[in-house]
Length: 290
Image: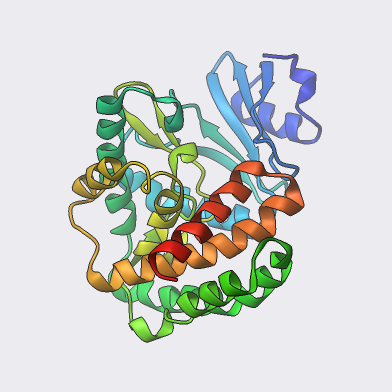
């Protein structure tokens, strides 16, 4: 860890008012401009301090930690110790583990994915279906409405045929009817699953909101599952049910929307991983359904 001076003011003063004197700080931000996360250590223990990039992110994440995360069970996610609406900041208890993508032993990776499936099911079941269903319908509308913006931003990275396919797939969403709804994580993939070799922990809830539960499978479906069907099977075993035929069709449509978003975001921000994920998804969709 580096010196505590690395924690900027007035954030440092607020953190010390909550946890006491901070002895060391480590920058734990992701490699993107709007990520602001620090690990802090002091007499009272270890915490992560996170400043949300936008007010809506702060609102979503604090809502998740207060209303949904406690349902995951002790030790399965960080605990919100304190938050500041003025600073858009949160102090979270530290949890052990490394991003799941670092696990290379196939049997342990399958175990981790099965545990992750159980955690996801608990999260999805937090809200009654009727309460979540209204916001799920809005999520579908927003996905369809936002496609033109993403396709426009990604036009240099898509052929006309590819853009047409993505549009055709996303346009099928409204006709699928009401989809099973629940409280979504919103960014569910191996980067936000910590694994210590025995237990899986779910982190980063800044995109959490009620919506169609199938949308939470998109990141894995576009990054991990194509090359590892055994991990899809393990996760759905932990989740406790397979996807329905309608959800499978919705997963394809949401994956198409995600590909357009990835190819709009990745090149603009120099994110090679996101760009590659979008490109691979487009190529797979062209082969399988084009």
